[in-house]
Length: 198
Image (cartoon, rainbow, N blue to C red; front, side):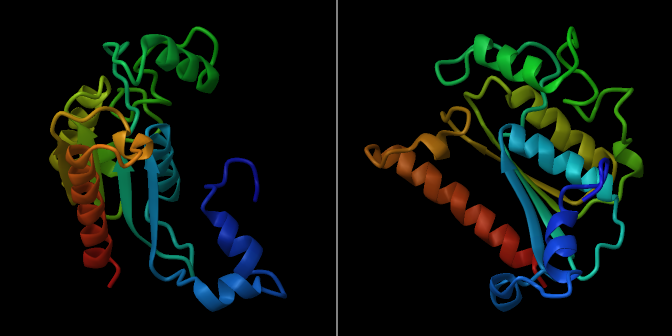
């Protein structure tokens, strides 16, 4: 993979363009029906990977959809929460961006006027955006989804009530109420994939 190339070129280049394809991938992977998925900053990466591809041909790999679960698109310093303190957000922010970069930097928020890729001009596959009502990053998630729809993109939005940032990754099985929210989120993700893998 070359610098500046989308990271999703890796399976194609390493496994399918090689003289001896990876046997496990050759047997089990269906690269004609792939989905990009990530939560928190992983959701941010999903957006930018898809934006770098911009509808281009990655044959035989075909991206059928994007799942952004509680993506991190902070437009400004978010309010603190138990699960996601301002100190944590600041640490991640400083780790990912140039020194002194403000919240809402174009590399962290695709709605910034100086974002490398204009949403209205991007060719993106269908998107599922999940948020949580008690997530301090909720405003950025809502703004991103609304901007997608204004730009004419196919997108679904789901907000888990009374839940916190990435609650599904921290669930230990002890709360039936949280279990119901995890099941609901998982069910919607499965339905989105099944509905778009044709």
